[in-house]
Amino acid sequence: MKRSFSLSGIMLYPYSLFLIAGVGALLGFFTALSLKRHPDKSEENSFAIEMLIVCVAAALPAAILFDALFHFAESGEFVIGGATFYGGLLVALAMYPPLLAFKRNRTVSIYDRLCDLAPCIAAGHCLGRIGCFFGGCCFGKPTDSFLGVVFPEGSLPYEYYGGAVAVHPTQLYEAAFLLLLALFLWKPAKKEAFPLYLMLYGAGRFFLEFLRGDDRGALPFLPLSPAQGVSVVLFVLGGTLLLVRGIRARRGLPRRSKE
Image (cartoon, rainbow, N blue to C red; front, side, top):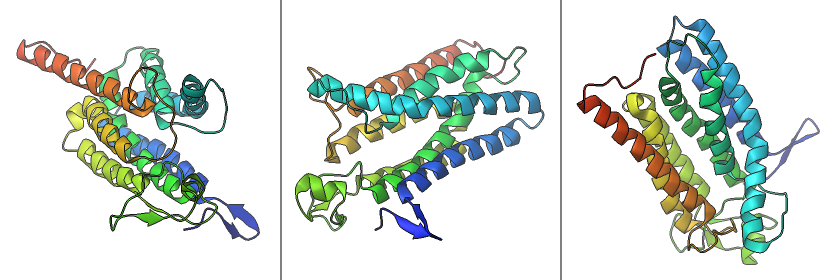
């Protein structure tokens, strides 16, 4: 695998290319899905897409800041140098509903927009994780499994373990999981896609963390990684949302899927 290559004298990095592709896939799929599911809501669709771009722009610095905060909680040193997906996701999801609420006379509910967005997040994140594999970050623990991957000299796993050691390709495990999740949320589960995304990704990420070998900081007073802590929160939020919607449905109350 190559961490970089030259094209017409320009140095390119697969990690950055896949990251850009992931953002493009997120925005492109959301645009296509909005037009497909709400074909007569062009003005609302445009507003929803524009607000999503604002949230994506805020997600990157948030991902960098959250990573620095996690490591500060563990070591007391505030160092900018990494990024965490959960930091960007939390900030983007916290911003998006209030921004959508600024649109008056909405006929597509905020919940429906979030359900449209869920498979797009998973698809974009899938490409981002493939970029992580090429970049060598987010690597796994050593393994004797046939699935083990030996990263080259100079890579993060090579330096972390002090040599050529076969490790779990946790980046590819997660990419495969995210691809399946995106397909599931796109159609079979589209009516409850958002809470199911929170629950399923939260659960999947929680267990994948046990295979991770890189330093991700630690939660104070808990034997969990920061990502596992956030995963638990997402799972609970998704489950609560599903429960509330189920109770409303049994009582014959509208689920607020339309406004």
